Image (tube, rainbow, N blue to C red; front, side, top):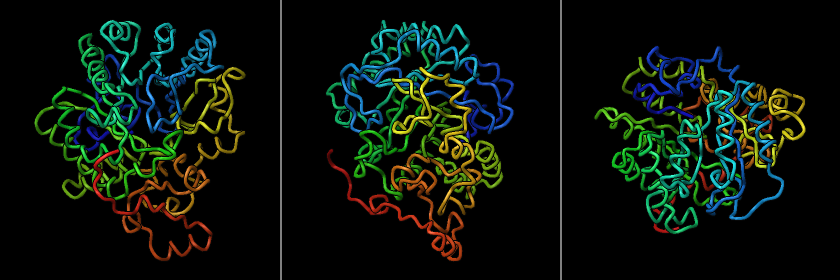
Length: 431
């Protein structure tokens, strides 16, 4: 995650401690504040846990390819509680309940209550359509510290992406129901060409509905998302989207609106933010770069400080790497699987700077970006250590000279960026 509000606007938030290794005394006393890790590379992983594959929607970019049906082989309640106990003793900073749609699982509130009893911080990732007033009350009482509700645009745009008419209206009701019981809640949105063109409208919506936290995710090619090349932003559009996000976040701050705005799944955003900031405030930008380098970007993300357990108990580097498992929690504890570097991919991810290829390997921002998303490189180039194709920085911006480019070519490390990411596209009118 790139904390736009923190890095660009100087607004402190509860997650800054584990992202940037610093925290004020005031924030450390907040009820849901994280503790400050000793070092970025020593952070225990946040665990994203798909507790069920079943979902009541059919989103066109779903990484788990979920449908409205039951799936055999999911973890039992007893097995799930064993996972929770292991994750708690492993000192993971957070357990993210996801799906499918996690609220469909009958024992979800029993599981989060068990996690709370063990001192584990639990959050909920949901489409929101099942959160009526009574469910919002149960969410609050069971122990979820935060609820992230996914949208893909305003009104009809969201419903078409979600595959169900009325999904937007129900998600909006979910926001209001959570706020009514004082449940911390925010917006999660995956950037695509259809909602990107309405980003300003989305920021207006965030202000109008008094949403205090919004995470903008970059598209990752996994599950049904593998076939969405026409929906992905081009490099030019990604830069424009970031310009809007930065401008609107700064405007919120200037007008005294306390919003926590983040981008997710492209660590290049941090470098781009730094470069824009350096044009206006070099001193502040220098401090931003220090925080980005402490964080390490992708270097300490998937496979290190972020993890995934799927519906069947398989352990993955992140939720998008569903096709590659390091082991199953029915056979070995998650904590044991996560520390075991006998698997070559796990070892590589935990030591990725030694393995990166192409323009990532010579990028002058490597310590801040860390090679970004390895699963995206694997999806496009069938090589987990190839460059992230979603990097929208130019060769000049990353310090890739003609001499360095020639050296990469000589090693066979010239990776062609997919054409759909480079081409200029006409404005979007319909899905």
